[in-house]
Each structure stands twice: as structure tokens, then as C-alpha cells.
Amino acid sequence: MKKKVIIGLSGGVDSSVAAYLLLQQGYDVEALFMINWKDSSVTLRGDCSWEEDIIIAKLVAKKLGIPLHIVDSSDDYMKKVADYMFKEYEKGRTPNPDVLCNREIKFDVFIDKVNEIGADYFATGHYCRKEEITKDGKTVYRLLAGSDPNKDQSYFLCQLSQEQIKKALFPIGDMLKPEVRRIAHEQNLASADKKDSQGICFVGKVDLPTFLQQKLKPKKGEIVEIPQERVPDESKLAESVADEDEKLKILCSDRKYKKSDGKVLSTHNGAHFFTIGQRKGLDVGGTPEPLFVIATDIIENIIYVGQGKKHPGLFRKGLFVPNDEIHWIRPDLQLKSGQSDEYLVRIRYRQALQKAVMYQKDDGLYIVFDLPQRGITSGQFAAWYKGEELLGSGVIS
Image (cartoon, rainbow, N blue to C red; front, side, top):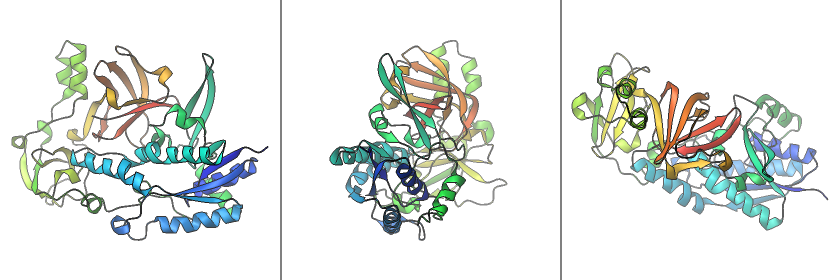
């Protein structure tokens, strides 16, 4: 008897080819399309909306001869993802909705549907791989980077649990994107020439200020420029301290500035609309080099900026993840308090993996990089790997 698989069919080329491959591998395949966002007022014109996606998904399902289920999860998406985004931005943090969407919506909906119709697995079009091993008599699931270095999407799955990965399949995880496109063309799939989606998961490419202004009110504040010499050098400060725990706190703490550290250049409409490393939207001219956001102060409603891509305020040596924000995909490999080890870490999608040492302390996880990292941002996810295996992640404090 054939094993049954539910494939998440988004209307994109990756999930379409994943569905085709599952059929070729002899599975009994059914498709699932999720509606998670219906408000087109915040999306930029011309970018994919769910109405366009569902048409393509239906065409692909018909071409492949598989049933298509449609689930409306827009209420859950608003409660678990969008509302979380608004709250994080209000606090001056920058969340990653795509990671949350996979953890809170996609994979749980898949598992519910698998149980509902009695399927054996669910599948997605993510560029990542899964492997099963036996350890101490138990099955352990490894989440591995996709084989295409330009498309590896394991980072977006960094908050998944063993239970969520257990029944997951990733049919295109060992393929390169051009090969996926080629198969889509050969099979005349309606998604063959569809561009890769951009922007927020299930929402599309958005005008972020318009999106955030649904809940967050504009609030006039000052833009203050910080000269390079006023940026503290944490490495030198740490060297002057004998206590190792204190060194870590210095290296991994978020920088704080005062208005008196720089000069007022202009005004903005709300510090909560800006994030570290941002250049667009400042609307300040006349400086020798472009300005970038190096810090935000939500309490005082001040944006601190620096000139040039190499401004030291854009770079930090370390970061901190509090205990309640640490997540291990491999609980069996979790660091215990007092332990440390070397890992490869990334702080955003498509960033090259960076060498770092992670220190688990009583209050949380301290991550110190070999090289200073640009744009470490509170609210984003740091994901850590051993080789090609994604072991865990945490929300940057």
C-alpha cells in the first residue's frame, strides 16, 4: 500500500516540483494550500497575493492529478505571527516572521491535516534535508542544510522541534534551483516561470511602515549622528576585566547611546519603525557618506545613526540569548550551564556561517564571534550549526 503524503502547495515552483517528485517516488500525494493573509492594502502592487497563488496551485494540482485541500489560517496567523510582530516592533525589536510562521502555523497545520486524513507524512518545498539516526536506542531527527548553497533555507526552520520534523519530507533539499526550474518546464507546470516570493511569509512584499502603522502610531523624534570615536570598543573593555563572566557580558551586551554623544541631524516618525543597519527611510542628506541606523531608543524615541557601511556602530563581537528564548532542535546536544563549544552561527537568512564560541551560563547563552558581525539586531534569530546540521536557535536579546 502506498504511503500518503500531504504536500504544502504554495503556488511557487519549489513546492510544485516537490509534489511532482513525490509522485515519481511512488507516494499517494494530496496537496494543501494555506490562506494566511487576506489584507492586500499593505502589499506592494504586482507582488504575489494569495488569490494569484491559489490559481497557480489549482492548475499545478490539476496537472499532476492530485486533490487540493484549502485551509484558512488567517486568524491564527494574525494572532500568532502578525500580532507578535507588532508587539516586537513596539518594543524596538526586529522579529523574523518567516521563522515564526513555520513554527507556529505551517508545520502545525500540516500535522493536523496529516492526522485528519490519515497521511503518513507531510512535505514542503524548502531547500533543506532531514536525516534519521539512532542514539541510545531512540530515533533522532537531524535537520541539515540544503545542498544548494545559494538557496539553503534551513535557517527558516530553526525553531522546529523533533516532533515537527518527525513526519516532514523535503523532496528538493538535495537539488539545485536551476534543476528545479528545469523539471518544472519539462512538466509544463504553471509555476515554472514564477518568481521566488519575497517579503513577509504569506503576506508578500510589503511597505513595512504602512504595515506597521496598522497598529503602531507615528511619533515624532530626533535622529542623532554618532561619530566613530564615540562608539565604545567592547573588546578593549573586556580585556581590562579579570572575571570571565563579566567579559562575556561586556562583549555581548547591546550598546546604549545618549543624545549628548552626538548631534541632532533631523527628525523621524517613530523609532519603532527602524532597525539596525537600515538606510532607507531616514531622509537625511548632505553627509559625505550614507547614514545607517546603529541603534534605536524606544523610550526616548531617538534613532542613532552613523556614516558609512564600515561605521563601528554597525558591528558587534557578540550577542546574548536569554534562557527562555533558547531552542534546541537536538535537545540531546544541548549545552549545560558552565559548558562552551565552537559552532557555526548565522544571524540572518543567507548570511555565510560565522565561526563562534557559545557559552551557556545560568542566565542564558553568550555567543562570541571570531570576527565582529554587522547588524546584530534584537528580536532576530541566531541559528547555530555543527557542520551542515542545524542544532538550534534563539532570539537575540
